[in-house]
Length: 309
Image 1 (spheres, rainbow, N blue to C red):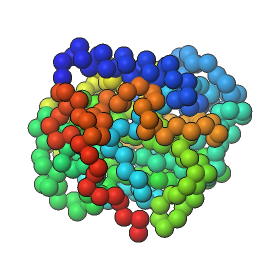
Image 2: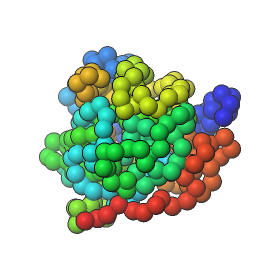
Image 3: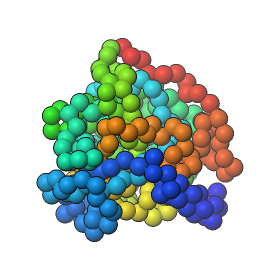
């Protein structure tokens, strides 16, 4: 895909997010003191509809589409690796109600999903990640190819959830990212989360320097090519924490911890499936891979839903 096409699609994505007020969720930003987070000026640049909470302030955070790699029925669990190898990553996400006081949202269910070290998503392991990558069949971790790197956690009274995972790999044409949804009103059932509604759909991002360090290491190093940079991504809005850029600490050798505060309107709905937030989110839409999409991009339903057992 030509650079001009990518930049045009990025404008469409960001323009749709700005214009579609129904596709906006409210978010509180955490501390911006870490060098791998969005700056304090990023957080303060958006209008606030809630009061300050702790060391952060409530700001608008754009929702984006869920992308074509979503699967229903992810398991409720803290460790989502399923044995997948990679640099350890702990995610600590806080859910706040930003319509009033920025209080934590107890019982909110946070769902995440992302690709493995070579750029493959569970359920879509035939999709070509771009560059030169080993076939997913070469992975000997024993991970379940329908469930790895997908899962829910339900927030306690403090609104906090924590996941144990690995740093994501990359695939063309996207920058490194993690998908996220926040659900309310449902309940755990048979190991999954059922009912309720989706209040927020977004993505989590990292500064380029982190990926630069990680991708030199095995198993990531077996996927060669040119990962997309944050400024060139067609989904990331450039606004720091309010657009999903996490505060990150740690190292490639020992692992990382990423934190972010997600503010929601518990009365709003945004499942990201209807195109709000701008087009296809930079990924080939299910059923219609665009011209120039990587070969093997998903063209229909995945090869099976995750087990609910």
